[in-house]
Image 1: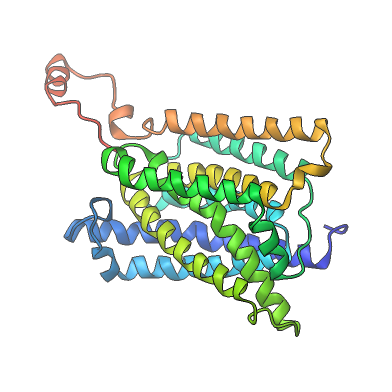
Image 2: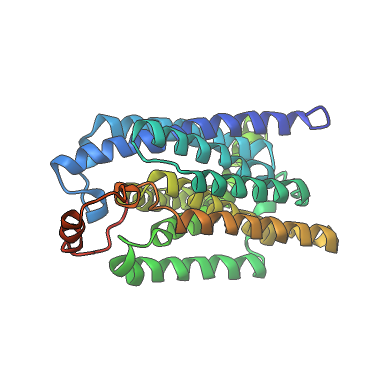
Length: 329
């Protein structure tokens, strides 16, 4: 860490602290969602009884602390360094879920997480440095460039299609629907966080950035995007296994955020073929880990680990039960 700037060190420390709080918040919030689901309408079914649960609010406090630390980290360090550190929250969440929610993290889940980490590390080590931005007006010029406007429009269209068409049909059975919405919006949220974070940092340094309408515009978008993400993240947590949600969300969010950052700040302009190929290899590794996690997510359930030494009558009784598809809790 000796070759890193003071700002980058501050950013990394804040990002690591953020991951610890956010990773823990997944488990605490799900505990509240489980309690709420036992006495009222579950969040996955459109209910909001979890708002009366102290555990859910404790999880929200933990997440808010983590997000504040993450927010500050983006003001000090480039997104290409801060975002991939979300891997720590994935590991913390998966381990805590294994011990406190009885959501078994089997060997293939561990391998999948390892692949995600290796791929993300590869991308971080070989990704270009982000352009250092010194004012909100600079970010505004990047955000209104044709390339990023096209990306932002595509994201909004895809999210709209997912919400109005695919959520009613597949939201309760396909994890990529809820997590996809959170990740797509998250890539835009990070760009807003970067803008507002820099505005606050410069303002505290004596250069007031809140006299520009761009700062307030980014702030309004930031709160809107965060509320949308929280809504669908709650639905995902209440419907699927936390040990699967965390790595899938991490992979999708990190990949899309890095993509958005590259488009907005044109990081690829100074890269050679070797760096680009290495980054693509990192993405392939990440996607391999995601595929492994998704295909083996049911291996830790009682139905999948049931002893094969069953009598013929037990086997017959089990076969008479309708084999309906049921998402993991």
